[in-house]
Amino acid sequence: MINNDGLTIYTDGAARGNPGKGGYGCLLIWKGQSKEISQGYKRTTNNRMELLSVIVALESLNRIGLHIEIYSDSKYVVQAVMEKWLDKWVATDFKGGKKNKDLWLRYHALSKQHRIEFIWVKGHSTNPYNQRCDELATAAADGNDLLEDSGYISSIEG
Image 1 (spheres, helix red, strand yellow):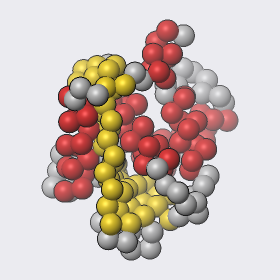
Image 2: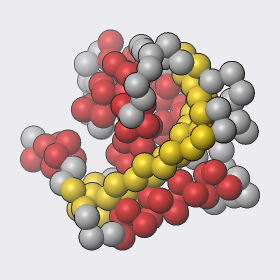
Image 3: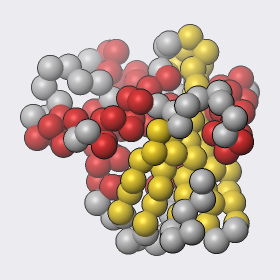
């Protein structure tokens, strides 16, 4: 689906092992124009890449106040936002060992700048935009230009 009233974003994350090499891919569609973004990491998790794909897409925007539809095959991301789990995690400072605090706080700050609706899509289905994001994420994970996921490293060292 394309959001004719605003910005449409498709996202996906991948990990080769969990943890292992990983990557994200996102596709932004605005008024008939599209932009792809992807990056790979040396050691991370699938959930981190799923969430990071959303964050990077939002951080790439140069406007605020947009109506954004974000399509993701990650129930972890979609449910955390749409079912208000994230609000509870923030209110309790992520008590109980909730993971990926660094990324969730980045997303939380970004989410205040826009009207965001998440739509869950079945992964590896017939949705061509989701499939393209999967291709971007897996290619990034398999690539040579891999970054360190400092947030993941901090979480296992701390």
